Length: 459
Image 1 (cartoon, rainbow, N blue to C red):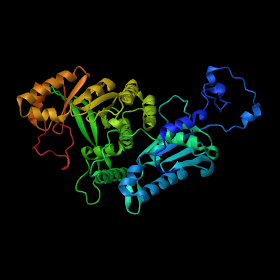
Image 2: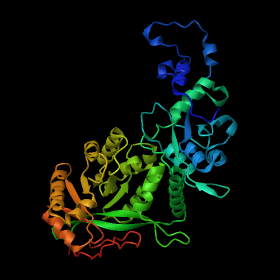
Image 3: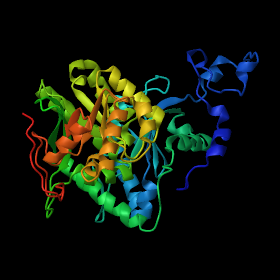
Image 4: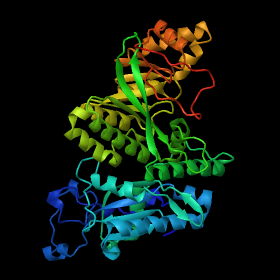
């Protein structure tokens, strides 16, 4: 198959007769006739002939979504090598026989059928998450691809599909599968001048994050959300992930540095999954702790990346009630309906949802309507502007008042000096957060603001 994208319109038309049976009653009749449901049909074909017809089998497709980007940034040779490496990982970890259980449709797309090393699900299961696909995605994409001095991460997409066995796949069914497997393009992606250099720089950061995680170099700094009234009441502690310094690096990587890189590359979901798993471990070790973890807007969808988390929350309701999931809202939610479903599933299990960086960009009102958060965190820029002008203080007060209609709890973020506390209190703040709040771990040099900071005592 050629390396360009499969045509969408022709694939759907050519494969009209290749649909899988819709339910158990027509499971024996895999050769569908268009509009057969609208007229009576009596088969005169012997049953033994139907038994010899090729049957659709459930399998997983694995799609390398960023393969064209890798080819453009690093060359076609590297992209082809990345494809072969993903195939090697599939064969090494999820296959008993590559001849009967694996099909390579194109450099960017593989089909994996059920075998003794991989249990396939079904497209009719009605569930949006799968532990098998979560394991597949996490293991295939955990390590960077290294070829001839170039190192990069693969962005993977997977789901269930039903097709004929490998030896019986036809061209029309292959094209339809490719059309189904490739995710929708990112409409916000920009290919302006300097795109290749920016992509490589982002990828260097992503590789550093991946290598640090593999080397146990991921740690957390804790920042409490405290009551603004002077009472020593901690609402919860936000865990801020940090990446340990690499060789020759002067300081650790702050989330403000590496999270935007992961988001631009489409790699944030794998990292967010890992961070939430670490947060669950911390909750188990600290029975009285309440912990918040930030995730990107890309991750706010109930898909296979969250299968094990949702299962754990079902089994450990006490942990769910102590977990706050903070969705970064300054870039807007790419899929409002998926975000709504994601938040509903987590809230039904007992978690709280926070929408952070409110007012800092993106369509925050649409995000509030979709997520129905329990907590709204104001962007730190409101407090910074309130320091220098009466208009800024009026804006802060207005935002606090407005957000109190959207959520039960409103947090004023960005407390960096003692005056900030008085400004926030005058604006009607209920909860405060920032590096000067007592109990926050000190910043690294990379994170420290230029202004002189003082620790604020809330006891």
